Image (spheres, rainbow, N blue to C red):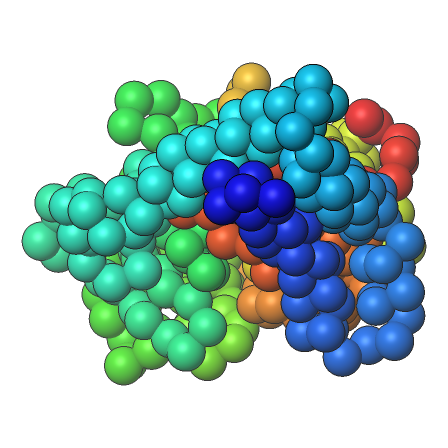
Length: 322
């Protein structure tokens, strides 16, 4: 076998080994035995194993100076070029060549130039309270869980009474707290290392809502009973966990969930009666490894592809409301 054939054999073997590593490494990172078993038996893991065996077979075929060997070499060439120029080069450009962004802000979620907005950087997340009193950013692992539209009614988490209420008086109550208020209502945000609490108060004689609208990065919701859905059905919801890749937030204190809030996607709502105060508690990365694997799929457990949205529906069990 000449040197040229050796090159194709080595290339196909390297791709096969890469797929084996991509199968084994995430599983080894898991600590829960049940999560490992679930990851190994997932469709994504089976696909990686099948591709590893395929390229091992192509490595054998590529060693033969025949028509079959030539076809195997073309397949290896095409796939290796796609792997380099379609996956890794764009990822490196996004990570190292694109203009730098301050801190952990992901693309499309840069804070607006509002000099009086308050930003809170904690160990596990970053949050920003804008000048209108809305919680516009809740970023965990470079994923903004909250929907923020430059034009339109959605400003992350906010008070609503038919329409979004502006809370123009925004003050830092302490190092890790902020209070946004107006005559109609107020919200106090308390930020801990791995959790935060939003305390909303209705000062009026009419019903009010505290709304948390979720961004497109959020691809699954797990209800209190453990059922998963891509888009939840409208209904009562007091405790829920929301996933963006392998990052997640568990939210308690809401009253209901809405599948399409004003046509903008899913939202959690805490209803406030006249004069009522309600706490909404948010825990960051509170889901177990088993729940993370169930919600995101094995392939996304530790894969971080910056600059692209998460693959929808990976590993999600069908639930009501889809």
